[in-house]
Image (cartoon, rainbow, N blue to C red; front, side, top):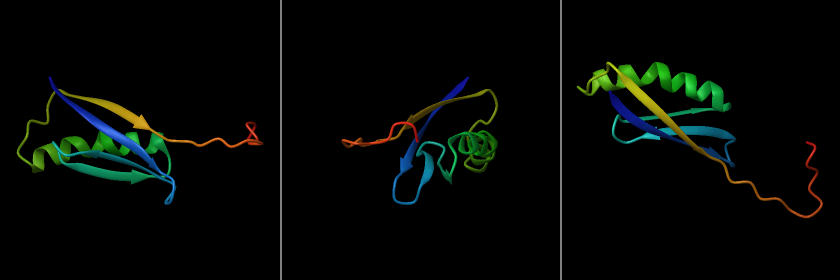
Length: 78
């Protein structure tokens, strides 16, 4: 099984989630994390094939990070 880690991170300026992996290579973006993961699942086999890498029996591990700063008086119910 070929295993790949896709790093997902939130860009606070553009309000977009980005997914990247240099080994495949791939970089995609979406406003919603679930939608981004779906895009990645469909794009990875194609990108592997284009780059001459095995695209059968692929395992994807998503590692997602989002930094949030909370200030005093922040409304947590939003």
